[in-house]
Every structure is written in structure tokens, then in C-alpha cells.
Image 1 (cartoon, helix red, strand yellow):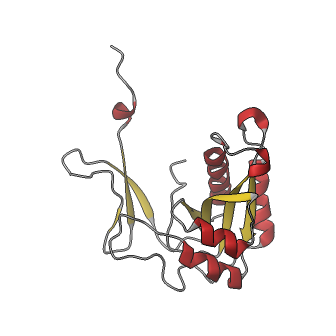
Image 2 (image 1 turned 30 degrees about the horizontal axis):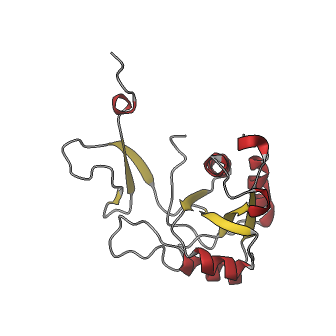
Image 3 (image 1 turned 180 degrees about the vertical axis):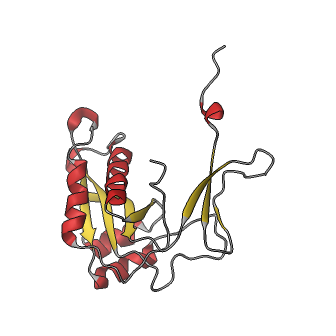
Length: 188
């Protein structure tokens, strides 16, 4: 869990095969599912033409001012677009997060990294992917081999907005985390 970090810059020239994407989606079959409906589906994207159409529809790293996302050569090699199959309802309960965690943990075992993206142009993404009305994009998971380091650090209680991640001049991405004692409500 501690090594499974969000990465926003990739080795774009290192391709991710469709078989690898299928193996990652396979992991979701074993996740718990609210009411066991299993309403989520995935679009697998690793071909350059479609990758180039998906990329500009994504919004990257809101805390990085004046950064529109990875530059050419550092863009994701692949995407998994998680979609809700509305044939099974309008809610997936907590299935989306459970499945994304399973996939990112699986990616880590393969030396891959990713970034779960919720900020994207859903209408345009649906058009580009030809999803129609049945499938509604919920998340985009950018995937590739990492081209940046990420470290976890303790939040600084004296710093305003101490939860914001940041990048240092050496290119290292820093992610502040709350200490355990802040996560447990004292019942005493």
C-alpha cells in the first residue's frame, strides 16, 4: 500500500500491452460488489491514435499551478476507462473505489504506475469512445511505467494547506499524509 502511489509522468515510449490491461481488469472480478450486481465495465486504450484523443480530455494535478499535465514523451502509455453499465442501475455503491485499488495494486506488482482521474470531460470522452447512453464514464486510470519518484511524508501541522501534494525542483512528487492519531476518534 505504501509503495502504490499516484504518478503523473510516465515513460511514454514503454508500451503497455492489451493483454496486461486485460489482466488488470481480471482482478476486478474478485472484488466485493454492492448487492453483487457488478455494474462496472472497462474500455481498454493503448493504441496511439485513441490515446491522443483521450489525453486532452483529462485535467491533471490541480495543486500544480501552471501545469496542464505530462508533456509529450511523459504521457500515459495506456488508459482504463471505468464505466457504469446503466443497465444495472445508476449507482455502483463503493465498487468503483474497490476495483481501482485492486487494479493499482496489481499494476504495482507489474512495475506499472498510474493516476486515478475523476476530472475529465465526460461528454466528450463518451463521444470519443462511442459509448452511447448505456455506459457512463466514472474514472479514467492513466497507466504507464513511472518517470518520476513519489515520496510520502508526514503532514506539517504548522503549514497552511498542509494536505496539498507538491513537486520539488528535483522532480520528486511529495504527498503529505495525516498521522495515525488524527485518523482515530478518541472515545475516552
